[in-house]
Image (cartoon, rainbow, N blue to C red; front, top):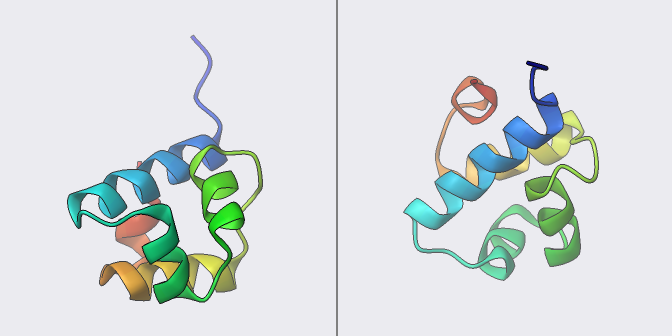
Length: 71
């Protein structure tokens, strides 16, 4: 069985943490200064996240960067 793509794994983790906070994609986008469309593409693994975007999301969700990208 193939290992899931890292972008999909990180996207699922972002969605998981976002929904635990009860936030919409728009609210996460607002707190991380990203567009809602970009948050959506990150969560669905359609784009590869950059370090700055990951840092912004981690700060917005109040988690460490390693906690955001853990498998």
